[in-house]
Image (cartoon, rainbow, N blue to C red; front, side, top):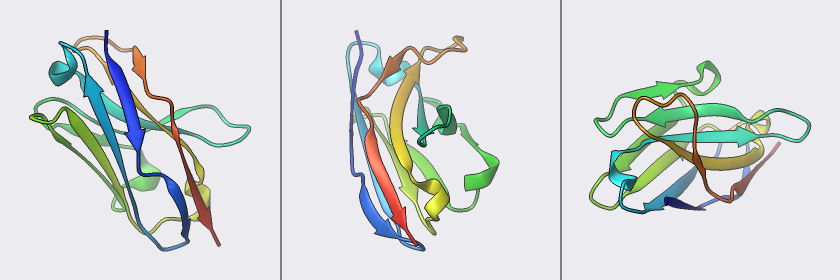
Length: 118
C-alpha cells in the first residue's frame, strides 16, 4: 500500500509562487511515476505535471515555463514549484502515483488548496 501526503498549499497573489510537496510511503514508493493533478470547482481533475523515477517530465501546455516538477528519490518526495501564478491556477492540487506500465494513477493524496487572488 502507498500513502501520499501533500503540503504547501495556500493563498497567494497573482504573479506569486508556491511550492507543493508530496511524501510517498510504502515499499514500492520509490519506483512510482508521480504526478500533480488539479481540480477547479466545476471542472474535471486534470494532470498538470508528472515525473518518472528516472526524471522524465511531462507538463500540461498551460503551465510550461511556469511550473517545475522534481523529485528526491532518497526522500520519496516530489515537488511542484509554481511560479507566475494566475487566478486560473486556483484549484485543489492532488499528488498521484502510478506504477510503471500502468496508465492509471492508482494512489492519491488528500489534496491541498491553492488559491490565487487577482
